[in-house]
Each structure stands twice: as C-alpha cells, then as structure tokens.
Image (cartoon, rainbow, N blue to C red; front, side, top):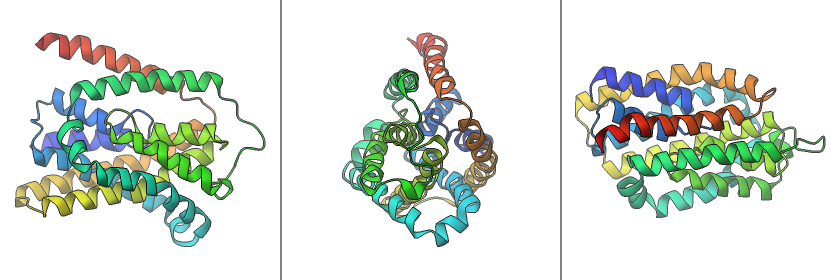
Amino acid sequence: MNYFQAIILSIVEGITEFLPISSTGHMVLAADLLKIAETPFVKDFEIIIQVGAIFAIIALYWKTLLTNKQVWSRVIIAFIPTGIIGFLLYKIIKTYLLGNLYITLAALFVGGIALIALELIYREKDHHAAKIEDISYQNAFLIGLFQSIAVIPGVSRSAATIISALFLGTKRKAATEFSFLLAVPTMLAASGYDLVKTKFHYTSYEYTVLAVGFIGAFLVALVVVKLFLRFVQTHTFIPFGIYRILLTILFWLIVIKSVI
C-alpha cells in the first residue's frame, strides 16, 4: 500500500464510519478498485484507521465522556455483547469475513432494503427517549446486541445501532449520538486487540502509512459527524438505503461482471 492509497482509504473511512452505509464495506470496495491486495497488513490498516475516526468523537464529545456517568454506564452495557462476540469470533472475522467482496456486497444490498423498509414503518413519538440518559439499560444492551451483527462487513455498525435504537423508542438525535459514543469503546477495543494479536510487527514504512490513514480519517470524520447529526434531525435514512442498493448494483455490473 502506498501513501496515495492510504489517503483515499482514510477519506472513505472518515466519511462512512458514522453513516449507515458501512465503513468496512466501503473500504473493502475501495481497496478492490485501487487494486490493493488483501494482505494481513491491509486488513489491520482497515481496522486501525477507524480509531482516527473514533478520535473525532472523543474530540467532539470529550466533556460528555469525562463527566456524564449516566451516558457512560449505558455505553458500556451496550458494548458488552459486541465485545464478547468480537473476541470469540476474531479468527473467523479476520480470516473469512474481512476483505470478502461477495459477503460485503450482499450485506450492503440487504442492509439497504432493511433501512428503507424500517423507515417506512417507523414513527417517532413524544414519549420516546430524547436523551441518551433516558435509554433504559435493557434497551442499551439490546442495541449493543444488534451492533454485534456489524462484525459482518457491509452491515454497518452505525445502521445497526441507530435503527435498533429508533425501534426501541429513542428519538433520532439521541439514537445517533448514542451510536457515535458506542463506537468509542467498540472500535478502540477492536483495534487494540488487533494490535496485540499482530504484536506490533510492522515496518517503519507501515507505521507511517498507518499514521497517514489515522490523521486523514480523524480530520474527515470531524466534519462528517457534525453534518450527519444535523441531517438526521430533519431527514429519514431512506436515501442511505437507496444509495446502498445502487452502489451494490453498480459495483456488481461494472467491476464484478467485468472480471467474470
């Protein structure tokens, strides 16, 4: 992987990490378009640069993260299911799921249909939780359980958490912010565990590539998070569902069919 490829992937990560369109899925597709071989380092890169995007959340929500115990308690409870499942299925995820183009496309397509279908039947009500502190611990755990489905590339951690939060009685802004904050322990744990498993066996050049990806994802995510939070308060997720479906079809017709 060269620096140009690292920058492109970092931009893709920064834009897609918090949108319900799957950052991992987009990085898999982008890597395929850029002709980047799915080596162990590239798989690590795709996981680790997500920390850059997560640091954007830390930068924007540091006060809440440091002082609001009610928020943190719900975030930790929601993290537990994904933490356990990610730990138990680590080898399967790294070996068979990450980098699998066909699984990614299938998950993007099915997820797009699900987003549209769920939005068509969802109705926000006055009694729904308007703040993260209003989310019950039981619902926080269930949201975390839904998040664990996102170990499959293409599903989208953001989509799984936001949509499940909405249907468990959370208003859009609170659901979106909860998804943002839940990403912090989830992605830090995933990236940290991955670094431990690889035993930091990278060359100096690879560390530099990781740094480029980290910084790029951080800067882009800072902008995207603010814009997305504004968007969800007045719009549905149907455009994202349509985008996922169209992306899958176009990628299949243009890229996959050309090599069959």
